[in-house]
Length: 317
Image (cartoon, rainbow, N blue to C red; front, side, top):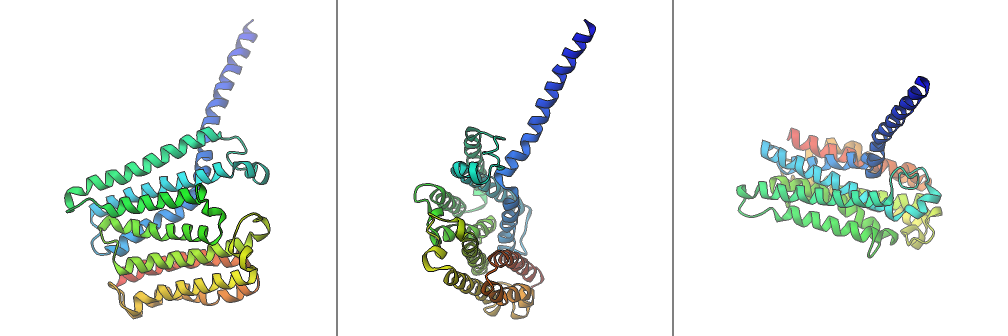
């Protein structure tokens, strides 16, 4: 009798332990759905935008504002990435059964609730920021709200509605535009988002990312049947050349602030962009060799070194 009681008690505790462990293990599922790696790459660009817009005026208020805007970006991206997984659920059940939704680590209903929660959290953060700093400005920081709204429209039309995700170059442009907008979004923390240097940095990031998106489509061409990608339209080699030309355009735009001496920049400070410039100039050999995977990885590195180059240039100027 005692043995049976012990066994029942042990089994009961064991079930509770497994339930608790399951709940703890559910956290990585949420994180995986949000794609924290992508968020970790995007959030620093908010701070880059804020720093470039006001390098010598990073007051406590601007720092707090930037943290709030970065939080808004993180939750917004989490919602966007989750929407992408919800839309791709049927295909992922076949092609990527290990992902969160196909593996049933989270239900589609739970994912939809998470999207709603994330969007509300992101917009609430933007509104809170706007109201907090309203008293210090002559008007509400409408630019922040407008940029957030534009990003929301771009995200929605990318996944649904116009479904620009399946329209090749238009989808590439939508994603790349959002990359540039994140930098301008960060610059609104100091209400200096229309500064020519900020716009050049944002345009540089946009162009390099656009080239990367095109080369990613080149890499995925064999599995993109049914999508109207640029390689599908004009051919693989032509699409690669377009990607390279756009990358070179990004290189030129990255150099312009130094030649025009925008803000605190001077021509000699272009030394901080040498790694980026060399990377982009020598990219032709990789693209011509047909190594699309390596090419798009190098473009990601070029964007990172380019942003770091701008930050160091402004810091030392």
